[in-house]
Image 1 (cartoon, rainbow, N blue to C red):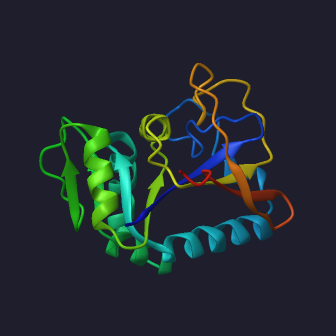
Image 2 (image 1 turned 90 degrees about the vertical axis):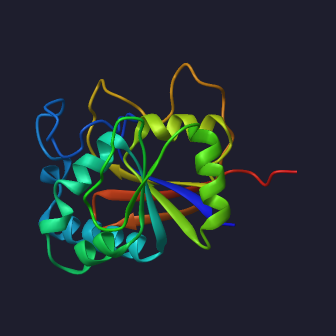
Length: 192
């Protein structure tokens, strides 16, 4: 059985929405606040994370974001992302054209639970905050990894829905990334 790991870039005040500035919500790419050394450290952290994944899981919007960029990119991270099996939860996407992509239709919870049974290793969810809300609410997430950017957004979508149920997570690791970022890893408590 695989482990589902949610990985999010997140602001100090908990916002996950539009860290690249491509959606028009954020004024700029959050990496712009980082020094070049911090950007390089963040890039290495992302590559290391992708190297630990056996497959990727996306909601439709995040899938379209990644699929619109990664097939034309080169380098170690692009090679890894492009080479992994990709699963997208969508009721509207019909013919994904990104290499090795599969659409999961129907009941999201049942589909992802079945996928976790098929994957040996880590199933990585990048972005896809709304999908993460659903998976967290149904206890399908095994680990949450947060790359905390030194920026305060004030508003925007958050990983932890303020109206959602209280969640207990256990701190598993902290890592300083460069001079300006923190990488926190939380695990869901063992289920009895």
